[in-house]
Amino acid sequence: MENVAHHKDFMKMIFAATAPSNGRRPTRAMMRRRVTILLKEMKNAGSIEQAVRPMVFMSGISGLLPECYSKFKDLVTEALIFFLKELPSARLAEKIVDQMSLAPHIDQGIRLGLLVKDTPCIQKLGQVISRTPGLDPIFKQALVDLEDNVKTVTYRQIHPAIVEQLRQIPPGNRIVPKPRIQAEASVCAVVPAKVILKDNRSPVQAVLKIVKPKVRKNLKGDLALLEKLAVFLDDHRAEWGMREFNFSETLNQVRSLIENEVDLVSEQAHLKEARRYYRGNRRVVIPKPLPVSTPGMTVMSRKEGKKITDVAGLTTQQKRLLAEALTTTCILKPIQDLSEISIFHGDPHAGNIAYHFAGDLPRIIFYDWAMMGRLTRRERFLMILLTFGLLSGGRQTVFYAADLITNGQISQNADLESKVLRFIDKTVAGKAVSPHNIFNAIEFFFEELTYLGIIFPKDLMMYEKAAVTLKGVLTDIDPSFDRNDYLTRAYMVAFLKDFMYLRIHQVILEEAWILYRRRVESIIGLHKEIRLLLYRAGSRWIKRRRGIRGTPA
Image 1: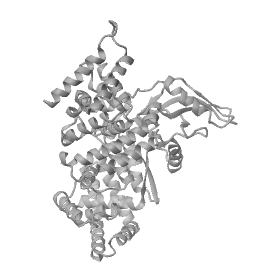
Image 2: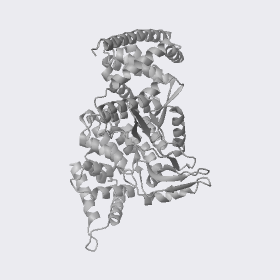
Image 3: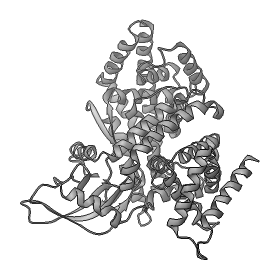
Image 4: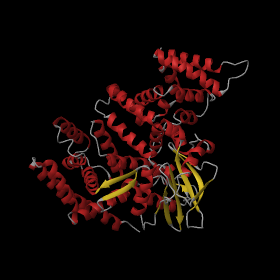
C-alpha cells in the first residue's frame, strides 16, 4: 500500500508539472520550475521520498541485478533512493523532468543513464560493475551505456572553462581547440586541439582534458552527501544482513577515488611517473603530458587506437595476444616487479584503454591515469603467499597472509581471529583451490573478510578491484582466455624464484617479527608454512612441466 501511495503522489506531480499553460504544452524550463517548487514543499513536509522511490523503481535497477547479486537488491535500491532524495531540489527536479520526457517503454539503459547523469559516484561504480561476467544482458548494456555514451555536456558549455585555462598557459605557446567533444566520461570531457609549443615549429596533435563544469560545481555537495550515505548504510546494515560490513571506510575510499578524478595536477604527475615506469616497454603506450598543462586542464599528446573491446576484426590469435598483453601489463607486472614500489592502472575499464597492432605486437594505450595505484614489495610477496595458500588449501598460510596484509588487524582481536579462522576452516582448509578458479577465490576471500569489518590497504584493494574490472574486459576480448591459469603459472615462477633468492622468506619473516614478536610460536609456525608451501609449489611445478612435455605434439 505504501508503494501505491508513493506512486499516486508521483503521478500527481507529473500531472501538475505537465499541465498546459495558456493552452500549450509547458516548456522544459517551466516543468523544471514547477517540479522544483513541488519538491521544496515535499521536503518541508518530510515527504520527499514519495517523489524519489517511484522514479527509482521505474528505472528497473533492482530487477536488472543478476541472481548472484540478489542479496544486494534492497541495499542498492535504498542507497540510490537515499542519495537522490538528498540532492538539492533543482538537481532532483532536473532528473524527474528527464524521466517525464521519456516514452513509457523506453530502453532501460537510457532511463538508467539519465537517472545517474552528473552523479560521478554512481557512474564510476556502474562502470566497474559493467565489466563483471555473468551480468544480465539488459543490465550490462545499461551500464556499458554509462561508459560509452556519456553525453551531458556540449562544447559550447565547456568552452568558457577552456578559455579560462588558456589564459594561464606560458607565454609564447598556443593552443587551438577544435569545437567539439571528442570523448566524455563521468567527471571529465576531452576536446581535440592543435598545440604550438614555444621554439617548436611543428604543431602537436593533442587533447585537452578538463573537469565538466557541473561536476566541478556539485563536487563539494556530492562528497558531503557520500558521507551522509555512509552513515545511513551503517545505521541500516543489519536490515540487509551485513552487520559487520564497514560502509563508512569503504565509501571513504570511494571519496578518495573521486577526488583523484578531479585532481588534474596529480594526474599529470601520474602520467609522467607511468611513462618513466613503462619506459622501454614496447607493449605500452602512454600519452605525454605537455608543458602547457595547467592546474585545471591536462594537455597531452593524442594517441589513436581502437577501444580495447572492439575486436570484431581481429583473428583468434590476435585476440589471444591482446588478452595476454593486457593481463601481463595490468595484473602480472605489478606483482612480479622486484622494485620496492610497483605501479598499476587503477581503473582499467574499457573506456580508458585502446590498442593497435605493430605487426604481431599488440600495443596498449592507457588514456586515463587519474587513478594510479602502488604496491610495495611486501604487499606483492604477501599476495603470492595468499595465492599459494589458497592453491594448497593451507589453513595457517592463508591466515598468516591475511593477517600480515592487514597489518595484524586479525590477530590483535581474539573475537575477529576466531571468526576468520572459522571462515577459513569452512571454505579453505584442506580444499585446495583449482588454478582455473584461483582469482575468483581471492576475490571471494577479500569480499568475505571485508564483510567481517576488516580493512585492507587502499592500494591493494584498488589492485583487487582493477583485477575484477579487467576480468570482464578480458572476457569481451577473448572469451576462451583463461586468466586464472595464465596468472597462476606466472605466480608460481615468481614464488619459486623469489624463494630461491631468499627474498620472500626474508621480507615476510621481517614483517612477522614486527607483528608477532610476543608470539614466538606464530613466527615458528609461519616459517614452517613457508617451507611446506615451497615444497608444494615445487611439486606442482614439476608435475605441470612433466604434463607439458608429455603432451602429444
